[in-house]
Image (tube, rainbow, N blue to C red):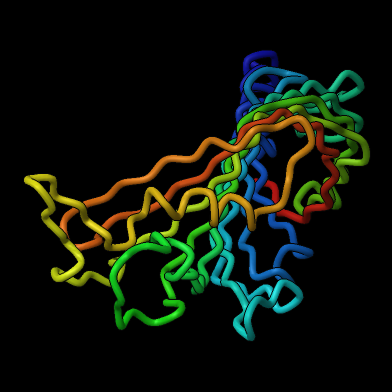
Length: 263
C-alpha cells in the first residue's frame, strides 16, 4: 500500500511539473518603442534544448524629421516578421535558458510617403506649342525598402524566478536581398490643343510619364554596382506613374535585448 501511495505521489509531482514548466515565453523590445515600433516575440519549447520563435514588428507612422525634403518630413511605415529556431546546448531544465545558437529568417518592408515636385517643363519638347502648364506640380511619392534573408545569432537568455526573461542577442549577422523602389503617380497636366494632326500624323505634345523616367531616376541616390530599373505607365489624359527599383545583397548585424514573461 505504501509503495502504491509513493508511486502515485511521484506521478502527481511529475504531472504538476509538466503543467507548470515554462515552455512558452512572450517578449517585447522596449528600445523599439522610442522609434514607434511595436515588437512582440513568442518562443516555445519544441523538444529539450530546442525552441521555435516568431517575432513580429509593426512600424507606427513615424516622421523622419532628419530627412526633411522641401520643408516636409517624410512619414515611415512598415512591418517585419522573423521566424527562428534556437538550440540551447547547456540547458538542464525544460525552460529555454542559458546560451543559445539561433538560425533565423526575416522579411521586412518599409515605406516612406512624401510629396514630390516634378519639373513639368522638363517633360516638354522645346518645339511644342505654347502652353499654360505650371512650371512644376506635386505628386504622391512612395519609396519602399524590402529585405528578405536570414542568418545566425548567438545569445543568452536568463529566467528570473522562472517567470521573467531577459534575452540578450549579443552577436549575429544576416544576408538579405534588398530591393529599393520608388513610385511617383498622378495625373500630368493635359491640354487637348497640344494634340496636333499634320499630314495625317497625330502628335501629342502633352507631357508624358515615360519622359519623366530619366528625371526621377537621376534624382535618386546611386547604389555602387547596382543599376536602376525604370518603368512607366501612361494612360488617358496624362494619368500614369513612374516606378524605379534596384536590388542588391546586403549583410547586416543582428543584436537585440528583450524582456518577457515565461509560462
